[in-house]
Image (tube, rainbow, N blue to C red; front, side, top):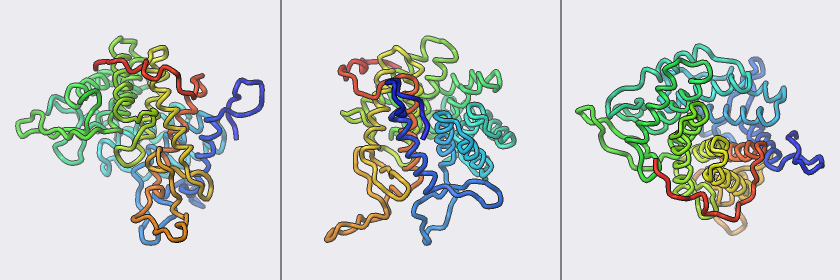
Length: 389
């Protein structure tokens, strides 16, 4: 197990780096399979695999790639590089098969893998994805990208992921217009989807082309990507408004999506909480001395600690639950004598749930490497001063 040293003059690895490595080994051992002849990696969407549930294409390949990149950045090794190569070569996705939210997340993960970890590029896929995303903007409902699911809708996940992708491309080999696209997409989200500091799931487009009905459910994924885009724009542009926007999202997330102990709570299925943890960590690094950076780091560490504390023990290592404040239960665990088994399938079987937990630990490890402390500060409320977006 590798990791930077703790700075105490001993040989113990950093705490969160060590925990992230344990989660990495567990998830990969249980839910990744390598082709014998091709070397391509495919993921199992559930574990243990069910004979009654045929294998299906996982919609979480982008998050899996992000986890693999984070692991490589934590400790670059030949094995981690080979895993990234196998995952990318194993992609079967075609842009026409994906909605814009999934397409933007996949393009973002591929770009990050190539630019940060020197992973193989998929130029044809990237070119087709970017062309479609760049052409998906329309003036209907005041702007924004179409979501494609369902038709006539503009959603927060698609727009947030695209905004973060455009913000990264603006300084990393994209088109000159990508910076304008990033700004415009974030501005549209803040104008049309914002509700008490957080963006909601999306809106429909009215028959006259104007904004239609809002889906007022909070989008955890949409807010995660919005926060990441604001943080990226704060670093890359130096414009005053972007740190304030990012700090506002951090404060709203802590107030409305975390409990009194600063632990993120589940509000939607999939790896949403892990994606939010990752972008909170990015915001903590981007905002530096702002009180919101302290708050963002505190939520990341508290959430990672809760996920780790409530893990179950299963074959290969820890198993995370969908709610980090509730003890996870292994799907292979037998009920105690006299107790009925839990009804329905266990969420712990889902790859997306395990990726969320892994990503939470990688986010804490990222902040640990940057020198952030993993303990709660004494002034719990100091960073939650009112802000406006």
